[in-house]
Amino acid sequence: MTISVIVPCYNEEESIPIFYEAMEKMNHQLREDLEYIFINDGSKDRTLAVLRQLSKQDRKVHYLSFSRNFGKEAALYAGLQHAAGDFVTVMDVDLQDPPELLAEMKAMLDMNPELDCVGTRRTTREGEPPIRSFFANLFYKLINKISQVEMVDGARDFRLMRRPMVDAILEVSEYNRFSKGIFAWVGFKTEYLEYKNVERVAGETSWNFWQLFNYSLEGIINFSDAPLNIAFLGGILSWILAFILMMVIIVRTLVFGDPTSGWPSLMTVILFIGGFQLLTIGILGKYIGKIFMETKHRPVYVIKEKSKSST
Image (cartoon, rainbow, N blue to C red):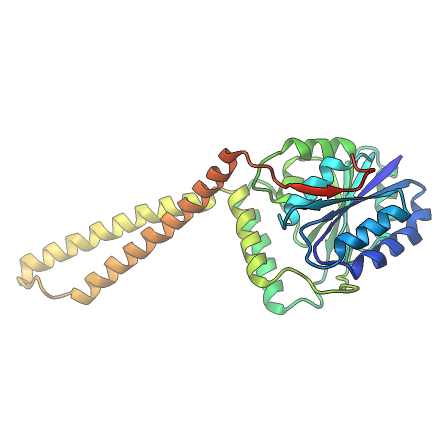
């Protein structure tokens, strides 16, 4: 039995040797063969050179190098497509996904043949900026209310999956990808291991607040049409409000004969309706943009170089 370890990398030259060493130390606990698949997502440092050297030293190490930065979702998809193991796991190279949990995850799958996947879930967000933790919790509360797919708060991409689940995920070949939602959407039986947040071992995170915010918007748009429903209901409410105000203006004009009064309130209504229309157009634009990208049928990623042993 083989476990494929998918490891996306972006400017991680310092973390890769530490990650590899930590994985090799706990390899004996798994009693399975490991296959490493590192994805160089357009790194600007020496990440590719480190991967080349590591691949020469160990035949279990494979790498794919993108022609530019396509993002973590593309890297995960590429790793899943090239993974040949009976089990597949996704891990961050900065060791925020503790390797020692992998043996426990494999044991859970061995003990329960009905179980398809063991995921991990952070119970704390120590070390994160409070504002990021606040919006992360808010995102999970919101997405679980407006989406038909339940996403576990604090769940990581770090999970160990059986081959049938991986094959099902690969069937979802859409261009606009949100892996956390896809993992839940395919519907295989999953249990979660809880652990406390772990700091990076080296380097700096490439994720900032704005990128995480955009990523959360991707998740909402990809797995819910609630924003469209909100825009529709808002449009109806705006029309009703405008009709009521129109009746008020007509009655007041007939009674008081002063059509010029109420200019501030009229401008307020115009600005409100205009602003809501722009918001609605923006929501429609996001969904149309997604459709536009899907219809192009562009590849999710482009490989510039890969190790000789890669499939």
